[in-house]
Structure formats: C-alpha cells, structure tokens
Image (cartoon, rainbow, N blue to C red; front, side):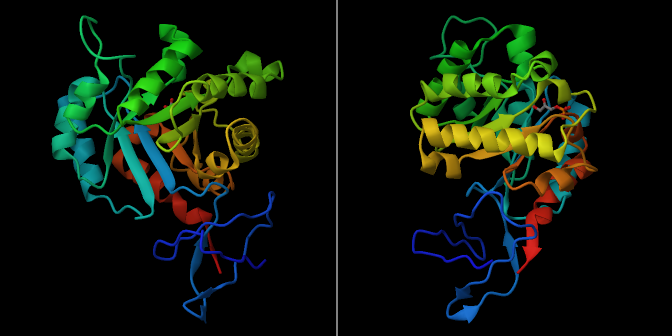
Length: 301
Ligand SMILES: O=C(CO)COP(=O)(O)O
C-alpha cells in the first residue's frame, strides 16, 4: 500500500501520521519519499496518531525498599524512545519517586480530589499533585468504581477539574464479566465515555484506558481481537460523538493482565496505542519489555 502524505502529517524523526483504511492489510507497507528519496526503514502503524503510551499503576503496593529497587531498575533499563512512559506510585511515595526516578518517566497519581483542596480529610488535591511535579492522574479505575463506589458523574467531575488545572488524565473504562456475558460491553464503555465527554474541557491531555474488569489482576487477559474490537468501537464512538480529530488523536490503551509474554501480540493491534499495567509494572525488567513492545508495531517498509 502506498500512503500519500500531506503537509498536515506530522514528522518527528521518521514518525508520521496518516489516515489509513480500517481494517488495513497486515503487515502494512508504506511507500513514500522523504526529502525526495524513497523512505527506507521502519514504519510504526497505529490507528490513533498519538505516541505509544505505557503506564504502570502500582496500586496499593510497595515499601520504601521495594520501590527503591524498582526505581533503580527503571533508571537503568533501556527504553525505546518513541513511547510515553508514566508510573503511578501510591501517594505516600510520589515525592520520593519523583526525586529519584529518571526524568524520562513521568509521574502519575492514582486518584485526585474532585475540586480545590481544603477540609477533605484523607484526600489529595490536584494542586498538591502539581506542586510535587506530578503530571498525570488515573481516574475512573474499576477498583475505585466497584470497591470504593465512585460513579460516572463523580469521575467525570474529577476529570474535568484535573484537566482544567493542567494535569493529564488516564481515563479508565471497562465492563464487568456479567456485563460482557450479557452483551453489554459496548453500552457500558460508551456510557462511561459519555460521562467524560459531557464535562471535559478538551481531549488533548486524555488517554483512554480500556480495562475490562474481568481481566484485571486475574491473569485472564483479553485476546488481542477482543481488545481491538472494543478499542475500534470506542474510537468510532469518539468520532460520532466528539470529533474525527479527537477520535484519531486520542490514545486508547489496554489494561488487564498485560505482561511481558502477551504484550507483543496485543501491541500489534492497530487500535491498541499502549498499555496500563498493574502487577507486571512492579517488576522493572518486565515493565521495560512491555514498554519496548512498541517495536512489534513496526514493520519493515
Ligand atoms: O488495573 C490494572 C491497571 O490499572 C491492570 O492490573 P493488572 O495488570 O494487574 O491486571
């Protein structure tokens, strides 16, 4: 296949973005001139036009000792350059991780308060997160929805507040097993997407994390086809309900039992723009393997 580039396509080194039919043949061969000469090298094929994104959600895990080791492993790991990497330590270790982790990796919180800080015992405000150099927050995680009881409206408000204050938001969505079995996967995901879409000021700093609840912490990963199917549906939803531009630019990442062994096959899917990783992000070398699975998106041109 030959892809024609126009001035609106972005170049960054050898990276570019273009619109391709879905589904596209695989492997996808792109032929185009760079500076008048035929392009030789590697093309990264993603349906979305954003950079591959991998987040490590450490959840309520770790001690100062284990986190020191994890940070040291991450600092010495060799990571592909064309991936945005973010880790989300527990609140109490955020500052410590921020000051000891390589600047190559950004820091995320696992939650934030819905408005300006004040008399809200036990909460952490967006302003405080920014104050310690945190640039992202995970919101709408299934553990907060289903264990803590946060609902769509509350999560939407939190997302709007964090975005308005300049934080990036990893906005989680995903269905329960019984919802999947009842054929409600798309309905649930679309309703959760709508709760964000109704209130967020813009989509520039949102990464959507599709995390089917039945796959989280269970070792029962979604198949690449199952994940791809939902990612395409979500991208379509964004196209119809927000805009074609947001649909193509917003990264949709997958989470739920991703590990060093299954990441490459998942990453090959056109609409999987990265991962949100729980358990496997607590092991530095394995997390590095997942980050570097961006290479399986690359095909020789
Ligand atoms: O919830 C997750 C990331 O936010 C996924 O957790 P696991 O990778 O442990 O299944």
